[in-house]
Image (tube, protein in one colour):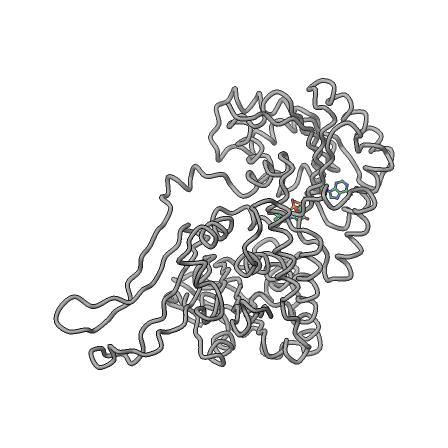
Length: 500
Ligand code: NAD
């Protein structure tokens, strides 16, 4: 049996989409694995006037995909309590304090509390303030605050939000979720880099030509258009997930694999992230918005035709850009990043493109003048693994070469059994391990970086939106951006038959 964790969870937004789709199933998996057993309880709060019985049914419904044993699901749901709660009403926190104290006694929770903000960020400050003023924070055990994205809209608003929550929680009590940091292969970046001499020895500007990070989605905005319209791909993906992946790729080896040592290295390399001027931002970043297309007989409409989206919306659904870390290791190596909706294929991956050998001595024997570059690919989604593209001799007479792939993918069975991102992160928070959460100093740097690009774009609304068809890999400008540096995207999936 696993080491049992002891805590009370208080979830703000207990009736919401995140709680149902991610948090309850993840807590259940921790329960099945014995991390949560007898000494835990969950208070779900939201505005609706639900009973505990009704809430228990919601919990059980949320587990349907896991096909749980009935008795086990019921025993799990029995640990859940519902409180109808308006986050701006002080009296409701008094009720919550009493309920928390009662559950603490009933389940012997030692005053350990995890507060989960699974609702609109505009309430984070008011909740954190009340947790302190109404003495829901305990002196006996730990108090940890898990907070969801988006963390601010720009540097200034993030700073204000941070000041608000810091009045009640210290930095080491705050766990800012970036769920990409909970993904198996994102965590594996460090193992691949720091566990392999042949990789780490080449991990610098002498041997690497450029690094490419792609987070492409095939779906459009679907039902998230209201939020997306105020955010765009830059805030939704680049400022957080892509910047975090770039940081893990760029940081120096930490002294040890402790949360503190890793964080120090992440912050250090983020301080080397070149912050563009407005003019540079216009040159180094391109934006796009998807347009209508018919793919395999299915009609897909313009982003601008989605519900809650302005018909002249300037919101970008695609970003490609060049990030640069100015230090000894990375000077001159562009980190090309790309993300977008309605692209040809859903995938998250990193392609590390190595420099060519100084001379192609096989030229006379091959049809191609140039050897293919060596590429290390880290597959994050949907398959997980990594591969190395190397040049080898073609079978037969002569010395014609061709690229071959040394490929390792985790099996479907191994990945099916591996913990889901939210499950890992919840367990990390229970363990007090903040390695895979975002520190304020990291956020401050990435917001400063993102702000300039946003400012550049605000100065000049996009005249050409929509500028890429659904099902493509984004606007032409994204290819031209790399071509300027003599590079091209390694990941260029076959585009489906599109009629525009
Ligand atoms: P949601 O709209 O589905 O749920 C919001 C919850 O807040 C509901 O339980 C609602 O009852 C409650 N609520 C709203 N106003 C309230 C008030 N005044 N008092 C008390 N309760 C109130 O939202 P969601 O999709 O679950 O997202 C929650 C948070 O998680 C947001 O910050 C979002 O950006 C973030 N997030 C969500 C997802 C996701 O997959 N849903 C992914 C990443 C981040």
